Image (cartoon, rainbow, N blue to C red; front, side, top):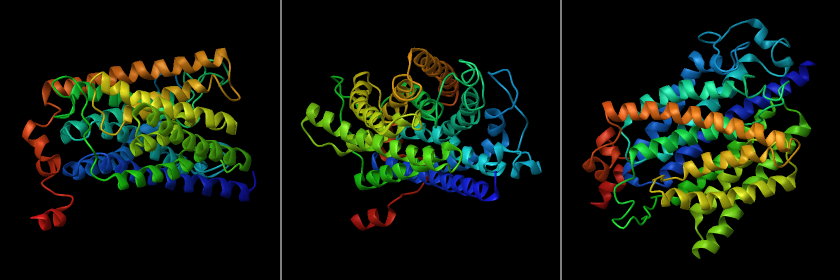
Length: 414
């Protein structure tokens, strides 16, 4: 490969790294906007903790858990820290498409996303200390181990021989469902917020305090997904990259429209939050097969994702689970749908591929649910995971952090 192509690939991967990093602003804005003002500092603190500690853990051991080299297909580890081998910046690494350092940093930006998904689902009632312990164990161990099963060429990658098994282009299962399974277990063990469900079991809306900020968060996430999916091409190949960006955007648009239409028909109101989560559902849904789908198939996957968002949020309410931002529906349910869609649409469609996809979804689900339950239930039985009633009513900003995110505004109100 000539130096110009090598440089173009490497620069594109670094741009995508920056875009994926920027997604964390989107997640923070979305979570803040869809929750109450009194918990803003708490949400920001959790997001900053996840980014910083997540990247350090991925440097310390996560990268070498996810990409261990030759291993048994289930669990491997190639040592602590990064390898400073000079071959990392030559054609001896990644077929000369980009450097070892770029590879690490791009993958490291993904690592924190699984934890951020959990953060939104447990917002407004979890104690910060147990949450941090959970993130260290879940992001530090679960995420890279599950990732190794496919991206590290483990047993899911090898199901069909020669890498023809389970397929997950950019992480509908390996990133989004991993976070979604953890979020599902967490909100089950944590319980709903005070006032979420009435005595008759009816779900009560708890409005977010800044919907414009939530809207900005979704638009930032859509932009960041150009790096999330576009960088997963792992080169600046013009044909594949442009296709991936096209299918990604079409699925996002269709997801938003699908959720808007279904929610309007179901509830007779133009619900912006459903529209926003539909966009995210479309993005999650296309992520597993963005490089395999035609534009028409991307639109169809997005439309179905949008409908799934509306039905999934209703289902979560009916089973008395409380997810303030819709994280379980968007990331877990749409992640499952997107992974299965690889066996239904696109270049790999077929019964055998569908079974591979189902196997991957099931394997990730069993492992993630089991591990998450052990961590969170253990914390619940020992140190406790939920703030007390007064702290929840007055806000986690005051009691967990001793700060107010809108101090000047609140002082002027008095």
